[in-house]
Length: 328
Image (tube, rainbow, N blue to C red; front, side, top):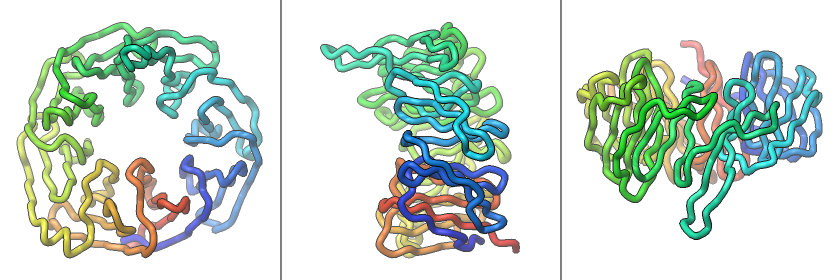
């Protein structure tokens, strides 16, 4: 299914791939690698350590803990903007907005987050103490121990809110699809789907609240833990439930994480302890491809990236492994 194309040592965690161009940082050097020509196309040395790269048209945007840097097609910095606030989410929304921490209450141990317009240099709105801002598809939400709310990304106006005790953990935003937003409540062992326009609860599912991924094409909510389940995205109805712990154990993939990607009818995931990658067929309930790498593991905080036909995985030793989908 996939073949090993390249391994690059000493890579920082910020990397991306677009139009067959792999961009990564090693030390302070930013490198653009042509996956088709199998050679380095451009490189540039900057003083920033980037946490994330994104391509915005022909412009490469790099976000560090203190700066947002815009580079041209030759990786030359054309503009660097100081963020001047601790960054909470290293993505840039609407090409100018970023989530930052604006205050901290040391008596309550609660932070306050806000949305900053990097070009205006100002905070355009703030959430309350203990409310964390989450953004998906340029739609803003806030989550707290008291519930969830939808906010206007431009001005922070509350469009709806739902009070729901989340237990010991903050609700986690799974994603947005059609007219539905899905949150998981780890402290309650529950998944909840809300109408994105009204906030009305569409359904709730009692299950382990992790290992979830939205599949808009098939209209499913996949759940991949040690076993596999799938729910109807619109109704919450259980569509598939495959439980065979001994099979997953025999393959060597006993994942308990939410870090995986979809590729057609496959879920590509890794083992939580060993350097094993696999493509799980959601129809046959078998792994069609397994690749084992000795001496490494794949940390859950480093997201798996799939940009057809390339699969990117970052290991615990700081190496980036690139696989290319084979033509069958």
